[in-house]
Length: 294
Image (tube, rainbow, N blue to C red; front, side):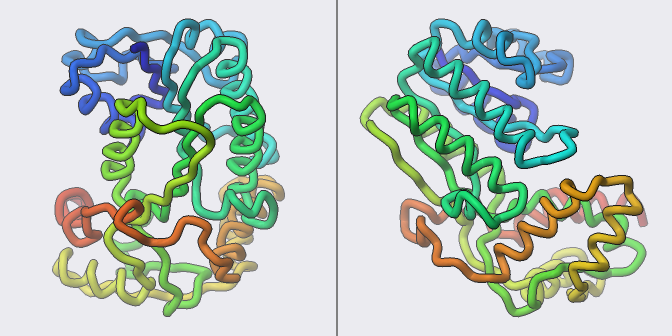
């Protein structure tokens, strides 16, 4: 069975690839820069240099595929929703023209709304395009990545602060991307599922930012506090960083969706709960970074 993996050096894809190798599969990897792949991996996979923003290239690279793991990569599009939707259209075209039987799509909680979740709306549009083909497709509705904290290293080091537009007592699922990779690999390797399915990937617990700050204080051995900031302050910071207005609203819109507390389509269950705690992830990944910058 030919399996095609996109974004193989990302937080999720870099976990999927070795699991498939260990299962005896020689996957085909689509990569903009194959040199970023570890040499030991390149020897055991088929690599196609491919920009997912090039629809023709995606179709060529996925010819003969039986299964596809698709991630909409970040784009520099002025409108992030349109950027994600354009990437999704390339995936849908490849599935349709190449008759790919099964697709696992890295989506997000909030995509089920189709509108009103900021840039996540682009993932919702991708879901719709993949659904319209009628092939077997699984949409993984993932929680908030532990790895998003890597963007906060400097602020944690200099100020000991985690800033958020969410209420500090607002709980949401936090998940290690490696655990998402486990789910992806398991579903790619299984041929028993059919039709259109969704599955949440929620990590082991829902956490508030107050709880996250407490966990980081214990793990990092330095005080960390959570601080609420307003949407307008976030807008000003993003504007100062050079983002356009639609890009800014794409980010702020995600926070608005989370604050509004819409019912979750894929609630926490044995199928959606994954094992890696924020504390164990932070000890392995965040603590060394802060120690190195001390």
